[in-house]
Length: 406
Image (tube, rainbow, N blue to C red; front, side, top):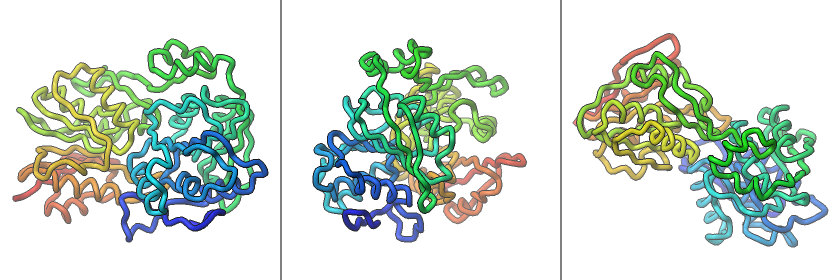
């Protein structure tokens, strides 16, 4: 990647030389050019929200221009993979460990932010939640610049910046990318807003204006899903289908395999954790591992599990699928794999999930997958496992089972 301050070597995580997708796009480059061309140098604490693969913080840390921000930039991300990519990219470009503070969307926010750079996420809900959390740390002099591809920035995006932070305008488009400029208008109740970062305080201030944060969102499952009917679900912002039960998961819940005894089960790509929670409710002796690369998702799964008062044992892990799970240690893997990486359609994540499941399963262990019929997951499962059985299907979804032989 060419930046105004020099060349950077960047890669996604996990690094795959066959992957045609880059670790940056035109909006990252546009934002860095804008920062380099500013008449007034950036000073103070810099926070980069949603930096997808670490391109922005790597550039700012590796080639900090004279007079630029005088403290280490901080990255806030919901993606474990994005955070690992950032670590690797910083090392790849000779940036010393500790030169960038790596935070998650679940961590406390910096108390004061002088420069806020926002890479617009795919999820408007995640943007809302994070801006509301960050707003109390901004002041009238904070420089706020957002960036995204034209197709990612909508009227609703600009309205969100305007409602939460202050007056907002956009730049001209360049290479199908656009910048967002926002002038913060700090609330006079900043201290009380900062104290409201905890969930109970958010609930109590739901109608208090800018500081009211609707996330995490709580709802009860609808009728018609057997013992799960009426069960509570907790969703942090950015989790897939956060305000309702998506139809794919509902179909999967109707066809989950029965489990008995002390089986080790994995809810792989757990999202809000309702699939793993359903297993734990049906078999309290099961040991369920909830894993996802999203910090928001794993927090949602843990909250959903606790809200249902499940007596069984559970583990909650943020990471790359089943990496770190010992070989041959799992009896059952349940999976609804994503087929998007940000805006790109790709089967790379599903392939890694299936490969990891085969490694982690015991002989005779099973991988159950739900997915859109047109994705053809049965082909991948046959290549990996040598078998694939159709358990259930409708015009849109299929549930498939693959068994580890030998």
